[in-house]
Image: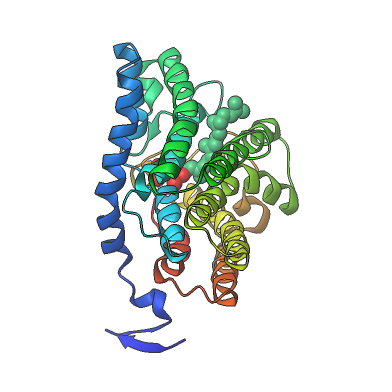
Length: 313
Ligand code: GRG
C-alpha cells in the first residue's frame, strides 16, 4: 500500500488515485446500449402502456451499480469479452423491476424515484405491476444469452442463471422485502436488521460479483473473496442508504426519504447517526481487506467499495 499527497489531502492506497468517475462514465454507455437492446425485446411484444412503463422503470438514470460490479468482477477475474454488458444488464433488469414494484402503493408507496415520478405515478399501478413482471423472465433470458455471448459453457451459463434466480427470489431479495414489509411498525435489533438487508439488498449485489466471476471462470479463492466483499459492501450500502434517508432531502436523493414515515427500523435508529456511519466505513474496510487477502488489487472494486458510502444519492 502506498501513500501520496494529492492537493492538500493525504490519501492512501490505489483506490484513492483511481478515477472512478471516468471509469463509470466509460461503462455507462455500454450498459445503456445493452439495456436498450434488452427492453426492445419485450417492448415489441407488449401493448404500448406496458412498453412505456418498462422504458420508464428501466431506462431512467440509475447508478447502474449492479452491472458495474458484475463487469468489474469479470475483468478482475481475467474475463476479456467486450460483450460482458449483455450479461451484466440481467442484474439491472431485476433491480429495475424491484424498484418499480417497491414504489407501488401496496409496498413502499413512493412518488419519486431516480429524480422523477415513480413509474406507477405516470403509467398507473396495473401497468407498472405487469411491466415489472415482464422484466423477471427477461432478466433470466438475458443472463443465459449474455453468458453464452461471452463464451461461457452451457453448464456455466446454467450456474449463472441459477445464481441470478436464487439471489432475486425468496431466499434473497424477495425474501428480504417480505421481512421488511412485515417488520414495519415493529422494532428490530441490529442482527435482525443485518439479516433483512443481507437478503433484500445484499443478495443481488453479491450475485452481481459472483456472476461476473463465474463468467470469467474465477478461481475458488477469488470467488470467496468476492463473496465476503459483496456481503460487506451490501451492508455498507444499506447503512449509507439509511444515513442518507435520515439526513438528505428528496431533491438530493431523487427519491422520497421514507423510513420514518413507514415506521421502519433503520441503522440510524439502532445505532445513531455517528455510529451507523462508522459501521458503514468498517464494512468498507472489511470488503477491501477481503480483496487484499486474496491478492485482488483491482482498483475499480476498491474504489467502488468506498463509493457506496461516499455517494450522495
Ligand atoms: C413480491 C414481496 C415481493 C417483492 C418484490 C419489490 C421487491 C420484489 C423487492 C424490493 C427490493 C428493494 C427495493 C431493495 C432496495 C434496494 C435498494 C437500496 C435500492 C436502491 O438502489 P440504488 O441506490 O438505486 O442502486 P439506483 O436508482 O441508483 O439504481
